[in-house]
Image (cartoon, rainbow over all chains, first blue to last red; front, side, top):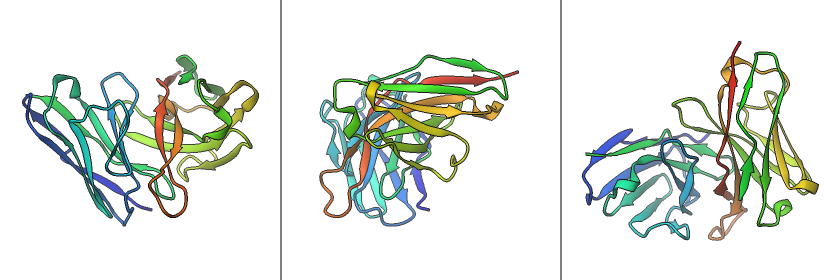
Length: 106
Length: 124
């Protein structure tokens, strides 16, 4: 089975900061990777698919990159409404989520 | 959108069936996935169903523990248990699967639309 890891597990940053979250797959998943945002008390929301394709309606401050085993989600300028837990997910063959990264405002 | 049934409180050993109704799109032509989130924990894929023919795939972790079904006449997918345990206490989400258009090989799908979730509490 392909395992997904994320780092850091949590971070605290100031409004306007650039934030980067890393996701790693235990085997090559090409670009079959999605990123989801889950705000407290809500269900997940798709941000990025195919590693770097922005889901329509998602603010352009969110971006994704990577291929193979190493991926990143970047928030170019952190906003208060971005407080959430972010999950990566591989969707090649079967689905598996990373453990999540909790983002707070400093 | 995907509309999920309301919160449930059950006792150990009881059965349960929760639902997820799709609207605003062709329900029968998109796979539906179920995802579990235990209290304070992350997301776990449970299984998927293709409502048109009820073709189903389960995560090995949930095979035999739950049953996923669908009634395409009412655009609804279901997740059911025959004998609940306290460890089944969780939030359950359904999600629509969309084909990744960028791939050049086999079709792979990501979860593009999610329901708001159904809370299941199992307690004596």
